[in-house]
Length: 216
Image (cartoon, rainbow, N blue to C red; front, side):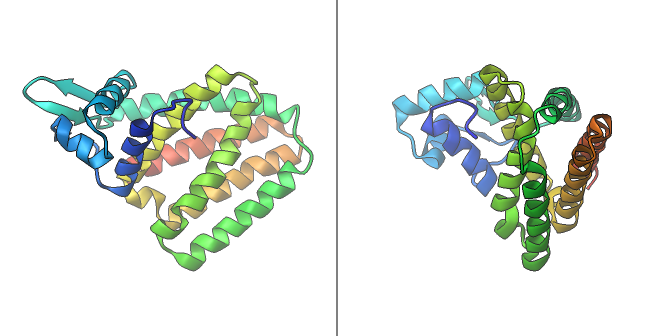
């Protein structure tokens, strides 16, 4: 998921945050950021302009570059926006449910929960869990058939992923399995043809993720 942005420095920035080579709220000089991202001056300027436009950094003369830090207001607003997009997308998705999607998703979630229990290590399960979460939630957004909306959503999810990684307890094994079970509640609603029940389950899931992100 690249948010429709074709810039190597932009993606290197997110990878550096995920890997801990950069920190949310950190302030550093442009040359220091360039060194972390492996960029020379010219591409670094392009990347800085892009990241600032996306609200990921603030550039201040004589101070340096400050990476955004999610406050309570940002987190709450981001989750609210995500909920609006996903719940209406789920409503559309339910009317054109692809054959085999329900059973495939059920099996994928059962496998990933077993994997998380087995390895019990965030660094080991982080990528496959992220891939399944992305496939699951993006199914609802794809139902809009709107490329612009999909790009907006992709950028939103990038920021949300960073917020969750900032609080590692929120993505620990217990809470990861809880999230997967909440996904299964949504799947059960769809399987039963209960669209409103599935939407209610999605609402509970998003509120649960928000609670775990802010509390643990």
